[in-house]
Image 1: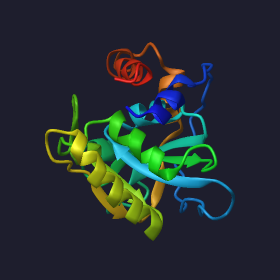
Image 2: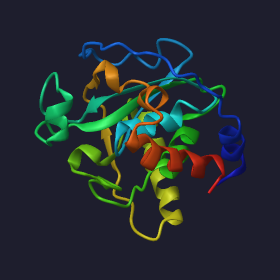
Image 3: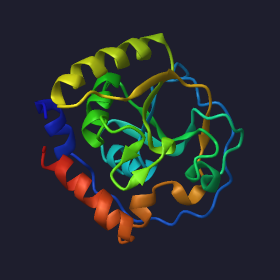
Image 4: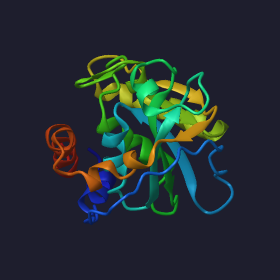
Length: 205
């Protein structure tokens, strides 16, 4: 892990467990990244609970929303996505301050936060909904993603299978998926899958 990310990961903020009442799925286009000083990244790397937990702890990240993208079904629901019926991937949409963390650094952490060499699988989670994918918001992000993927390929023994696609539409997941690890740290999946991942990243492994 490079020095900037050791610093970022070492600065992970502590977080409090908060209640999160059920919320309806939002079906709107994501906010334009040029609407403010913030920028956006939409990434899929297995279960969105895992990727959300990683990026919520990174300085410069302003919000992380779990959702669905890349499928053929409008208004997808979690049960249908999990069954592989909608074509959507579980993704997170990250709002970040580029003055603190760049899009390229977001991608650097993305490669470290999951295994981009396993096709349609992350650990125990199997299916196209768990595919590794970068949904770019504009041409500059597409170019950055291609460059980052090529550079990251030198760090892995097997080829990276991560897809790079234009973001068609982002659907916010149901309310109980938001801040999932923060709200459910003792849930078995969180203890057995997410917590060890966070521990490794924090140690710079």
